[in-house]
Image (cartoon, rainbow, N blue to C red; front, side, top):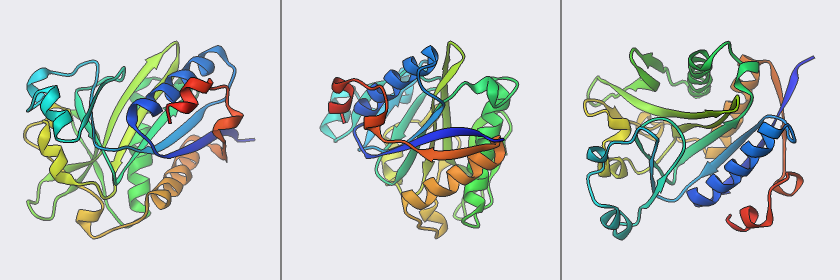
Length: 237
């Protein structure tokens, strides 16, 4: 019998509000109060700084970013500087990762495969790039590999949080405000750049199918009111 994973789509939500929800759910998952859950969201323009962020990958001051309409948020995931914004599907996996893979690296590789299978459902061929995490496709304009999905995880007390950002149809000029993931010699790309324009819910649904197929799960939707999240966190949305 396949194990169940819950999922919830927060819709369009500011990153900090969703970050509060994720943190609360992570604490409850560590305590064993809730099952594994996937969160989906779409954010306003936001620059996030992971635990390994380098200041030189920020091309402006924090005040300049805010003046330009970007939120700037320090987060607990691994990795460097990243961008989230409209047209991008952000997926957080709040799961006991050792139930999914024999180690953190293997789990990351399988999450990359989930993204690759999701893209394949839209006839987009994607690959990995040795030495770098994430999922990559060939940019038809340059012939070079460009990142279409970024990965950054936090693992605490055996429970994973954060996850993946898939570029469906974001404004790619916003990525020029940073050095994405600290990688200077590779570009970013979106499904829209490849002539494919699904809605975010369509990509979400294919992601769920791929996740369940690869990890042997069945997915069931959850509602925020059904989860042990405090009023403050709910109001943050």
